Amino acid sequence: MAEATTPLAATIDAFGHARGVDMDGVWAWAVAWALLTRDVDAGQVREGMQEALALVRETQESPTDLFGSSREHANSLYGRWSSEGHLVLTTPDVLSWRWALEHGLALSAASALVFLVLLQVRDGATTENVLRFGAISMVIGLGTTIGLAAWSRRHRRSRHLTATTPPEAQWSAALTEILRTRYSLPGGRVHSIVAEAHAHAAEVGRSVHEEFGTPEEYAARFTPDHAHKRRFEAALWGLLGLSTGIWLLDDDFGWFRAVVSAACLALAVRTWRRTD
Image 1: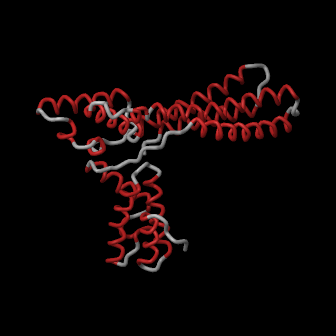
Image 2: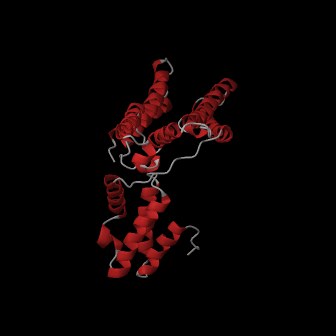
């Protein structure tokens, strides 16, 4: 087994040695992965895994018998931390314009290759078709990555606060950033939370930092709104499906466009219905 390079990796490896059963390590990896993909801080994931590891060592029972499946235990930890107000989430890094250009061109090239193969199979790769779908590929690739970069930078603008910014404003900006990026709360809800915090602090005659601690500590009181994020994702899939479906209105009906449109709309409905 490869040497662990992080504290979390070392903890996961320890599961395989606790009873001498390699599948225990697989279970631990699945739990950690399920939490990390939900943006839970790696340090908090490790703490939760260490609790389970201690019990496995003490009882010499399998983690599945003690805690259920990996997904069940991940959901249990997430729900407990959230209900106790101790959930710590990470913030994604800002996506640079260079990243958008490099990955956008790569995505464009991949899309163009797919279109070229389909054109060759169906209509033949004429110059007109190649140019038209080449332009569409550029729009798909660069449009997607530039949009993602713009979105990430929009929600990280509070990092540009200077040292002369009043502490109260810094606290509010940091809390706003955390609630928008980590917790996916809508703008109106975030505005209300920040305003209520300041109103309460003013009422008791203390600063928001004195009353509530750091923005991270105060944000831990709230539950992430994954539904809001999913609605946004569903809207994007729906828009892509509808825009592709518009092509079906012309005289040249294409099964490929119909399948793409139907797939995007199906993903939109599936994303909208998700509740986990």
